[in-house]
Image 1 (cartoon, one colour):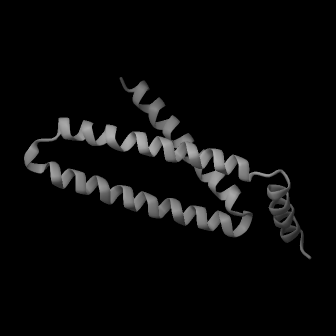
Image 2 (image 1 turned 180 degrees about the horizontal axis):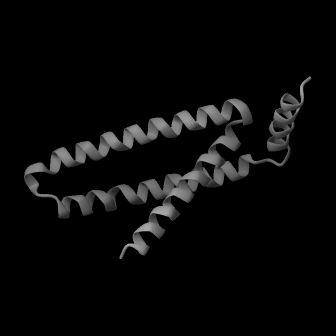
Length: 112
C-alpha cells in the first residue's frame, strides 16, 4: 500500500476516532440558525432600500444567488465527504464559511 493511501486512511480513521460528528452537528446547527435569522432581516433591509418597481426582480435575483451558493457548498461537502466522511465535510465547510464571514466583516470595517 502506498504512503499517500495510508495517510488518507489514517485521517479517515482519526476523523471517526475523535468523533468529529459532534463538531459537525454543532457547526451545522450554527449555520442553520444564522441562515434562518439572516433571511428575514436581509429581506426587510432589501425591501427598505430597493424601489418597489424592481423589488420583485431584486428578491428573485437574491434567491437565485442563494441557490447557486447552495449548489457550490453541496458540491464541496460532497467532495470532502467522499474522502474524509460527512462529519469532517460539514465541519470543514462550516469553518470555511465562518472564515469568509470574518474576512468580509473585516474588509467592510476597514473600508469605513
